[in-house]
Image (cartoon, rainbow, N blue to C red):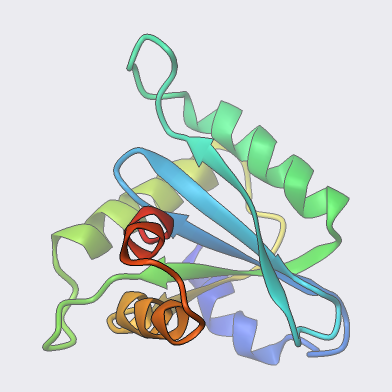
Length: 144
């Protein structure tokens, strides 16, 4: 599985779109780029638990993700890697890796995965939304 992470840097930047996965304790937030990778847009959120609050089987999640990857012609996945401020892999990184391993065990991933350092992305997003005039309530609602 982690060999795919290393190969992601070899992707042809003009070949196809990328998908981003942002794993939290309850959902995987999913976004996609256009084929030129100039634009990214939120696509959906996939719940990690069913109505009965039991974890969804990884095979069910992988089916959903695989279907979205096929539908959007995805050649690679960028997965949020929430490192600690000092750069170490803390509890949240281990949860992301656990999710990735479970998905890969359910079915081989159809594209390489790149773990992306997201230590400051939430701060950047909040600053950008505020600069664009979003209300404090909206900024809080839109951020995970």
